[in-house]
Amino acid sequence: MSEEKRSKRQERRNKAEQREKANRLRTMGLIVAGVVILVLLFISQQLKPIAGIVTIQPVTRTNVDRNTIGDPKAPIQIAEFSDYQCPYCKRFATDTAPLLEQYFVSTGKVLFTYRSAGNWVSRNVGGVKTESQDAALAAYCAADQGKFWEMHDALFANNRDVEDQGSFTDKRLTAIAESIKLDMTAWQSCYDKGIYKDQVQKDFDDAVAANIQGTPYFVMTYKVNGEVKTETIDGAQPISEFQKKIEAALLIADK
Image (cartoon, rainbow, N blue to C red):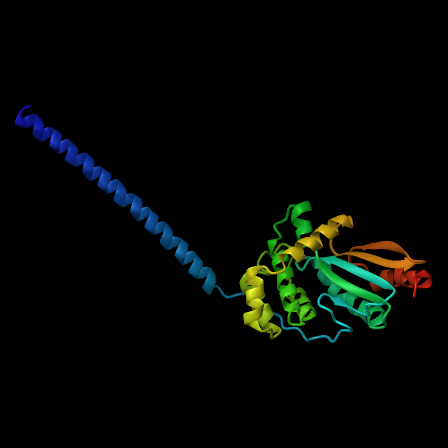
């Protein structure tokens, strides 16, 4: 092979190596740029101020046992299947629940239990409702410190809109937990580990078994001659609807 041909071959090889090197550098540059963008987005999200937290005034409740209030021997039991992101659930919590507690729970007639069914929406309506489950976890973790109902009230007070997926981000839930003066080390550990994930799922499974039609949804049970009777109340009904059903059941329920 002539010297001229060897020279041209070497020249082509050098150019190919240069192109390959340039491509590698370009690829590395794109990767680095992508990483930088992701880091900047993460930092900006961390530095982004959260919406203002509404601070609640604590309410004294009767016979609190985690997510249940009232006399365990009450003749009537009511389980609410609810969603912290649901505006109708917020309406019930704000308008009707205080009256229900005043007239029927504190007087020993009703044992009331709050259960989470936010994941019912994601399954049956197609909404993205992971924050509902996160809020439920937050409340159950607060229950470890005897503050389920304070967290329950604070969550509804900070529910801004059913379509707003920023109401219960991790940062906001932490801020809400701080607002009710929890031991944050214990609460954060519980929340981060998802300690009550199974309980949130059990709430959902029981809501499905109760043929839930939406939230809020109430299942009222009582016994007549030892036989369990069940009635349901669908939606954020006024206190008159609960009063009618409760008083009718009290006339025949076992004492």
